[in-house]
Length: 244
Image (tube, rainbow, N blue to C red; front, top):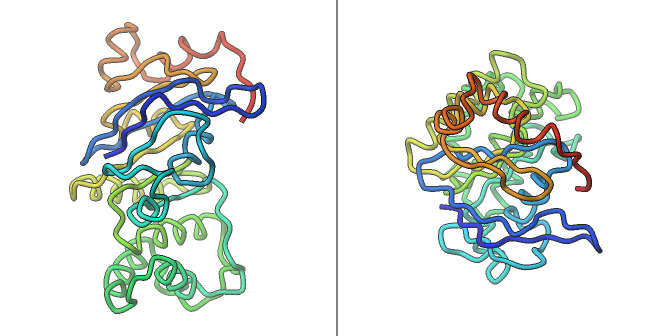
């Protein structure tokens, strides 16, 4: 479970995230939507422990990300929109590196890793250096590496970037499998059709504030809209966005 309580993040005089509160439950995919500069990535970085909030609190399965950062990171898998990888490592070396970071015994991870490599069609490339991977292959590798420690919470920034149609379908399948296991998934995406297809609930952010939240069906009904994209545009297109 993710609990965000009155979260605010300032950069100097600029308020990037302005007193937001929400809860993402176990066994749920929660979509966090908004235009560029609305505050999505800032929020994601607070959840992942990469930046400190100005005020407010974030709890992951009851663990405060500020008070107990190592405990929070130990149960979290983070997939950034622009992942950094060591290009001279092979794919399997990259995954083992992540396992070491989380103090996981490789023997405990190996079977699951083999399944995921096969699932994404990366098994033939496992012994190849990352520098020889395409962007889409790197994205798949990061997804596998982020799950090597069997995290209870997945925080994902733009999961479909650089992926072809088949890979996007596989990612959607994988996310649904994870929530069936009781995991909590918090994701941002600009692809509103993806959000509508996979998210149990969503929150729409504009200028650092949540302007709407609920299931896609609820939001469409309230706005008398045929698609989540229509709701999104109605709530955000009139407001200029700026900042992180």
